[in-house]
Amino acid sequence: MALNLIFLGPPGAGKGTVAQAVMEKYKLTQVSTGDLIRAEIASGSKLGKELAEIVNKGHLVNDDQIAQMLEADLKTKAAKASFSGFILDGFPRTLPQAPMLESILGKINQKLTAVIYIESSKESVVKRLSSRWTCSVCKKVYNTVSLPSKKLGVCDDDGAKLIQRDDDKPETIAKRYDTFLEKTSPLIEYYNKKGLLHRYDGNVPPAESVSAAEKIIAKIAKN
Ligand code: AMP
Image (cartoon, rainbow, N blue to C red):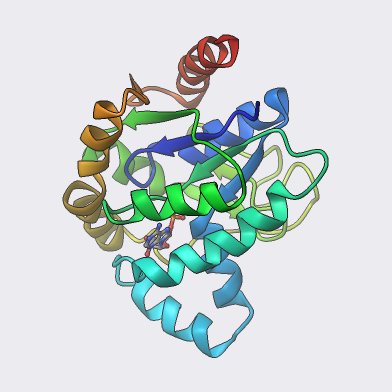
């Protein structure tokens, strides 16, 4: 049985960082709708230009549009012989997206194993995101305060340039947090009722957050 996990939490809760740390151990594939959107924007397509306008305001992309992008990506990844599960970061982000995910998973013969909610305050995510840098090539995430690269501005793994996301500006971050409270937080209760929710306090340094998530995942993987 595949281990299919959702990481839920406000932007900057550490979903990507924790995903990077546990992926290798459990041979999981990371699926990030934010990365899919950024790839489309970087391609310079007409759709990419429309998406950039929405994302840079801190708003959410239309449910159907993002579900289609996710379905295509998950289908490709789940079809690989080496597939043993995924960590989904950034989807679902609204209540209507939850049944959309169930329908996508049904089509590819997969089931959701668990949802991990990383609780984080507005104060700690604003602090974290304003010092977040991402590798322009492999997308590895660094933090100039808590998780710096060995050489300033350069990725440890591939030597590529680190860049700051356009939507990581303080006023956009605050807006994205409010969007999370309004649109995404109802999903916590949704998955709690389904008996799938596990939560932990993410207002801690990255290494502690990773180890809290690892403990939860180890328990889930055993069952
Ligand atoms: P992220 O990297 O997950 O913070 O996503 C960056 C931005 O992409 C978000 O602020 C949204 O504008 C958009 N986005 C990502 N995932 C979704 C989703 N599931 N539904 C709607 N918009 C999304």
